[in-house]
Length: 206
Image (cartoon, rainbow, N blue to C red):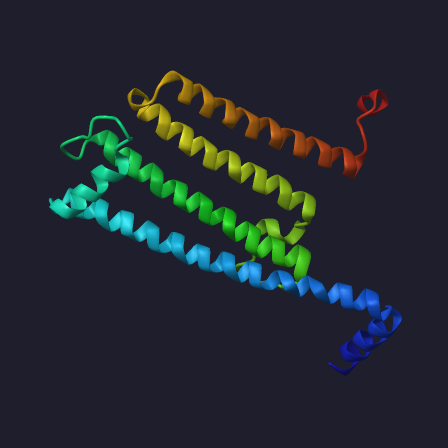
């Protein structure tokens, strides 16, 4: 303990005061990550409200059925009178969407804190996420892009399942946005590979 403290004191003395002060400002990000934790709590609450309504609708609760049918009905489209298979599928996809967004929040909170604020020292912990052992700004960026593609895929699937409620322009626009996300993720991954290993030269293939 004393050796570690002495090392920290020596490190502080070797860093100029202005630089050390600027380095301490990284803790200003802590309230941001705590705010994301609150957002995570909101998503957990929303997930359970939707799940309880779905279970209630399946058991014949009229209030739960009204909530479910309202949530799956697209504006200016016919509202189903009963709980159909399509309605159940849309609600379940909505629950999956909440889970994927929650996973995205976890990656931002834990990965961002580990990368930009302070080490968590989770090495050897049985519950340490596999990706956290080699996380950095580049890896976090690629994982976030991949997570966004997954979320966009869920939204696009919900649109295709309920395609009759949308016009062609909306469907094409959502498909185009999803392709932009996909191409952006590929570009991010490729640019990170170039920065890490350099461009691939013809000699590298020999």
